Image (tube, rainbow, N blue to C red; front, top):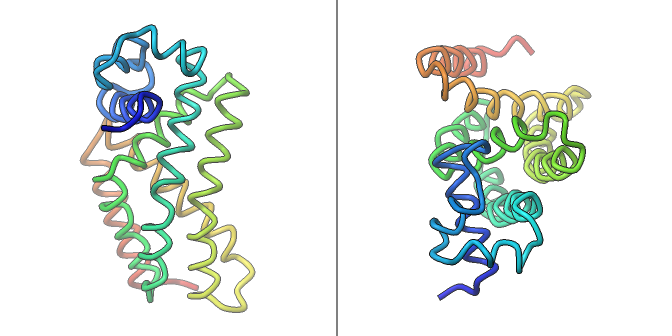
Length: 178
């Protein structure tokens, strides 16, 4: 059985996935982790600190699999397949919810930006490999990751619009103007 800190981190990630950042409370985290609320404060001091730790942990945990998958990609279209996989794993929902919660909260914004940078870096490496000698590869990595996180936010309020946007991006990568 994972230690209490890990159970709290896992419970936080699951709570964010299920209830969004607004529904992430000491009570909801404790219920998901199967512990008492007091342990949230004992181990992390606050819900805020636990949320920050969980955001970085879920991103770091996902990196080796993401990097492995990216290493085998051969086209821009392959990169969009990340949306389905990452959405199923919940990382996009966590990052999207963290971004929503970070608005006006510099500490949460700093942590969320750090997690996003961890995720963007291997995508940038892949785009630089796929688009050698193209200076816009780094910017495209930022844009693609922003689009995937943004699609997660849109999917929460208008799934049809998110599907239409993803379809358009897929079409664009199959017929790149670059």
